[in-house]
Amino acid sequence: MAANEIVLTLFFIFAGAAVLSTVALFTRQSLLVAYMLLGVLLGPWGLGAWGLSPVGDHEAVQKVGEVGIVFLMFLLGLHLQPQNLYHMLKKTLWVSFVSSIVFLAIGYLVGRLFGYNSIESLVIGLSMMFSSTIIGLKLLPTTILHHQHTGELMISILLMQDLIAIIVLLLMHGASVGALHWQDLTLTALALPAFVIFGFVIERFVLIRLFTKFDRIQEYMFLLSLAWCLGMAELANMIGLSYEIGAFIAGVSIACSIISQYIAESLKPLRDFFLVMFFFSVGASFNLDFVRMIYIPAILLAVLLLVIKPITYRLLLGSVSETNQVAWEVGVRLGQSSEFSLLVGYLAFSSEIIGQSASNLIQAATMFTFVVSSYLVVMRYPTPMGTTALLRRD
Image 1: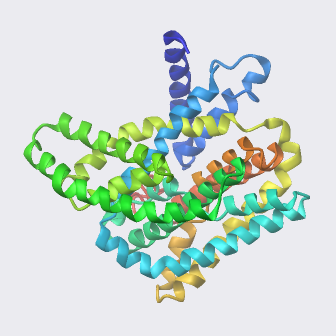
Image 2: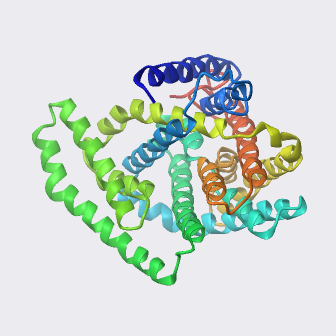
């Protein structure tokens, strides 16, 4: 795109996002919903169908937006100190595994019920295994996120789901190119621990010394942390992992540092910029021509997930000695599908593993759960945009 086209595209995206975000806040919705609806409106099947969309190069927007997921994983890692992470993962490993199987089965059965083939139904099921890290964290007050048990429990489940999602994306990538063998999996299994060790060694002997020596120069700290995040992401991709897992490990490696909270705060605006672009591109890829074909299975799938997810988490967390109150709250907060659901659907469609109808079914069901789940959480539990002063917590 030419420079003037870039500026104009950014103007329409962020001006439109600001308008729809205002509406979303008044209706107690997650801002992510506003970004996706804007993408539908300005996308090639919205105003673009009549040649009226001011956004021309949607592919470029999408590539820029995917960087937001990298920063999201980096910031998630910054909030998880390794010793706390290990303690919580031992408790939630079984919960995450069993719940993922349950949600996969729901998606698969709905797919088969409405005539999708076995592969498409399997992909639909795989995409439904996860809950949204972005919505879960954005609707979780900072005090709960850092200091209360509910937040730690949520994050550990989300982390396990993110790791499962990365494995799913790896397997799907191999299936799409016909090049996935047991040798590849073995190399990946060996590369991951080596990559983790490398990250912690560099942090211990290089990064922490640089941060300590130049901690008064905020611009330098920002640049160094940014370089660390993107460098680890690129290195992970080079050795057969993924950008997301590389960024996450980069964050975890410096989570124990005294400057981790400063880095997290300084990178949030940059992350939010790219996430707006990412969710806009997700909405823009939604083909409105398929709405009449997929709205019934999409609504059924979304409703089943919204009902069964809280019940599943209530039973599973109760089995590991969590209280009813905590188990229900975690279940409701994790009642939606995930941004990884959208990634799985997009990768499967772009690799021709599934058709566009199945891809749009995944998108529609995910967006529906985003809307309803966000509303339920805001109305019932403490969030930064609660409906009452008692529920409004920063």
